Length: 251
Image (cartoon, rainbow, N blue to C red; front, top):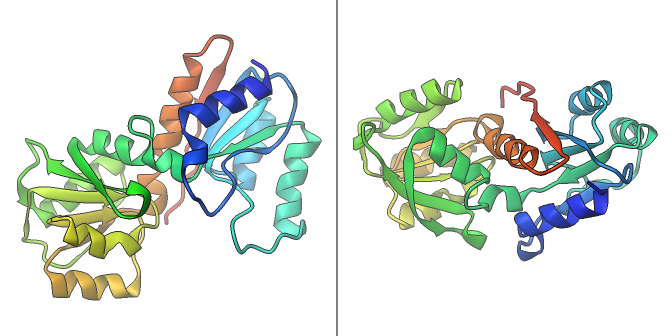
């Protein structure tokens, strides 16, 4: 497949132009014109790039790429090394941030719901980034502490539960990654619990005072599944092979 074809395909698939984001979505670094093998991962770290070079991949697909709003734009230090690895080996970098979060089937939120068995019923928050639905049997309705244990079992990472662990959960709201800022909107949407990746100091007080518990399940742990779904999707295209690699991150 031509690089330009893959770029257009991914932009259309993930509806990249629709969302206002903190970074450019799509092709961030241009490599060789022909793409046969794609490596998918969560973040364009040096470790992921080294894996791509060693495996002779033509392109890398990630959720967390480069050129974030407000960043120092100078090509020095770690940034220089990462870009040098891509350019010296003619490897392309694709990055889709919010578009990968919200995709109705392949996105991080959709994939987390599938992993957990939650039934999505609606959206909330800015650009409909937050999802809300029901805890399906045999999980629900259950206490928040029971739900937290089920998350630990299915994601393989111990989450942090703050607030009322005995609250019965019928409606669960979730938004993967660093979405603790949407907690209040989740409460207003009628959630019995809010699940995200990260937590902030003020999140604890809001959980205690509102009576709605908050579960921080890990930024990386909640956002592994979109890139994995993309790898499976791309592998089904003619002439293209895609693999997913999960590089452990405790956050």
